[in-house]
Length: 95
Image (cartoon, rainbow, N blue to C red; front, side, top):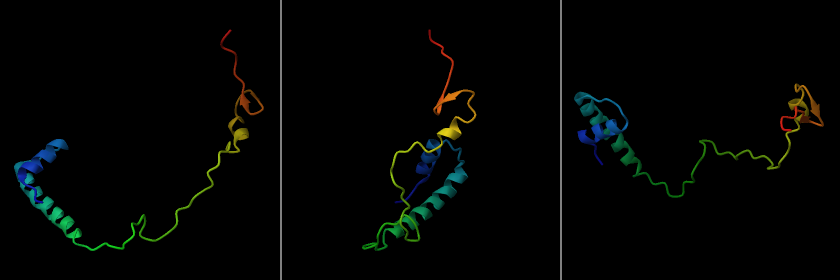
């Protein structure tokens, strides 16, 4: 796959980047070099290679999936002006 000046200008327009004619020519060469490197990666034989999430093999840390109240009810209502059994007390607004 190769990139021409029209493609560079179209991508620049889609990205809302102002590109001059000289810059478009320079970017054409740079993008073709990058795409050439990516095409070289297709030649690498990766059969039998496991997908990785990290460079170092490691198990993901997992915690018990349990619903709790966080044991913070006392801390949450500590600064409230009025509470009752860890609930906020508020003035009645509807008659």
